Length: 160
Image (tube, rainbow, N blue to C red):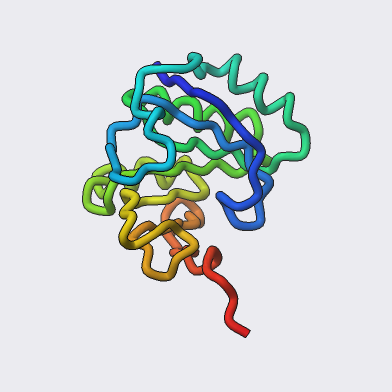
């Protein structure tokens, strides 16, 4: 079962998108310095198709749904992402995974067919978040389900 604690409409998680960001609980990553350590717990509400549809319909104007974390139920999460793609083809679908590139490699092909954007990388407080050029995390735009384009630099301050 996929659970979530809360959601928000955000403008910075996925570049150029008005995003419904859903905080998934049961995080398995245990990143030191995590900004939301409570998401490691088995808390929150069940996120099923009915609940997801309610969140989408209550937030008119969004053009992206982002699952902020994977939780413990990978198949359930993929099913929800497929639901968004099928029922709302006008919306982009994103995932913030805290897994490393190596740990994500086995799922890359399967996830790439479903998601338009995927962030990979455990948070490393010494390297900083996506908006630091030193970050170890990467945000990919997935084109045609196959081509992974690193767009992390879109988060970095513009040099004039």
